[in-house]
Length: 85
Image 1 (cartoon, rainbow, N blue to C red):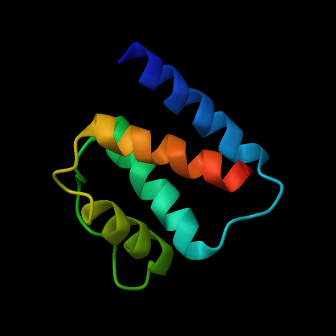
Image 2: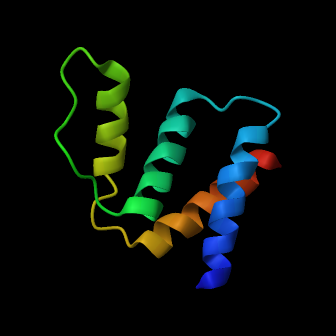
């Protein structure tokens, strides 16, 4: 699994160098997969009603609850590869 961890870390660097900015849905998916892969299930309270971005991020991450970190890391790596073309 060390190989997956290395790929995950590299993908988290590669995502910053994408030629095009992904759409908001893809950005939320990247965020949620990264958080699930690095921290596990969502923790902490949901942001306040007027924190639209924070709420969207929290909800995207919470949809992955129960997903194994290794699985989330693999999906993250695959998505970054797809975005890089």
